[in-house]
Image (cartoon, rainbow, N blue to C red; front, side, top):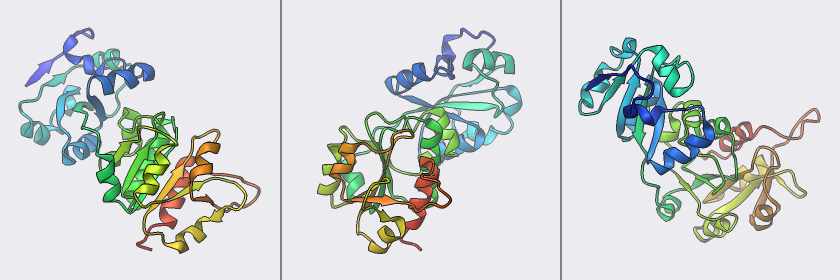
Length: 268
């Protein structure tokens, strides 16, 4: 199903149009039930996790590298164009050579996710897609069972999030909470101890939290600028800090997540 594209306005490749327009893509992709996977490694991970392709889009030189994949999905359109055509359509020079438009999966069932998890991460209003991707990569590497995102949090299946996560976003179950901070009570009802990473009075250190060895633990991480909201802190069980040296008061949220996930990993 190889189809050569020589017109940037060809409607058959509308899934890939204007990928650099973040506001457009944030609306278009969930509404149209798709997400974009970029690079051979990420596409392989998406397919291995059971995600189904709508189409592939690449320059001709990448066809041999994708031969085994395309053989398995010979019913799926493969759009091929020059580097110049791809750049006109997607809005940038695609150094990784190939993309796939994938069917967006149905949202995970929140109650089932909580029932089957012991340690989860909750991301409150984190809007930077790079940070989202980095948190998911750490979650996958350090044994976090699931990630929950609040209503205003960025999309984990946005192209940049997927790329930064190196496709590990496909390995970690996740769901979007319908309400926040009201959702904290849902976590408590499911048996989770909620631990907010925040520099407040009477915070436990991350080592003290790890020593508690709570049966079910929800680590809550806040937005890049202001951290967690006062309403969130008022409803969580614990406040947690990562001790700093040399007058540094905090870490980037992605770095803080990696420290917290490692410190509370029950495998250690």
